[in-house]
Each structure stands twice: as C-alpha cells, then as structure tokens.
Image 1 (cartoon, rainbow, N blue to C red):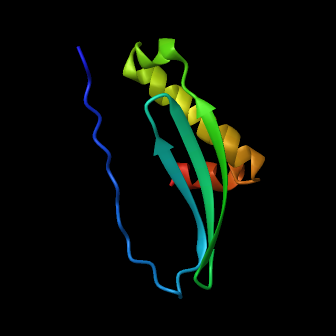
Image 2 (image 1 turned 30 degrees about the horizontal axis):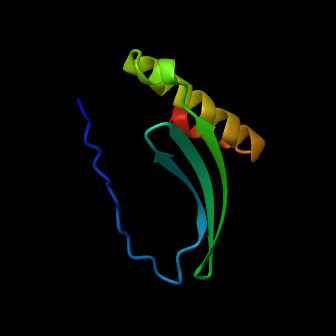
Length: 92
C-alpha cells in the first residue's frame, strides 16, 4: 500500500516595504524544520533548525506528534531568545 503526499505551497507577494521577524514551519514527512525569517528592506535572512520526527511518533497518536513539534518550537524560540515573547503571545 502506498501513501500519496500532496505538496502545498502558499504564495504571498512580498513588497520591499515588508519588515519584521517571522517564524516559518516546514512539516515534512520525517523531518520538522523551524525557521526564523528576518525581513529587512526587501532582503530576507533566515536561521533554521531541522528536527527528526521519530518513527514511533509518526505511527502513534497525533497528539504525540503535535506535542513533539511544540516542544521543538519551544526549543528553537528559546535558542533565539524569543521564549518570553512567544509565551506572552500564546497567553493573549
């Protein structure tokens, strides 16, 4: 039995005036990537971390996968110094 995967891409037109810091999530089949994209005057710099999703989590309950991904996001935002900023946003 084979499983089909569908790629999804969201196209957003960015303007030169777009500035800010954004988190992006890339949910692959066996990997999970978290990126910090810093947009400044039409240029983008990104920092990313790749995390492996253990096979037992992929075949277990969906809540285990979600909790694992949330833990990875927390680890990433802690590394870049955003832990307090993100925690405050989640409380709103």
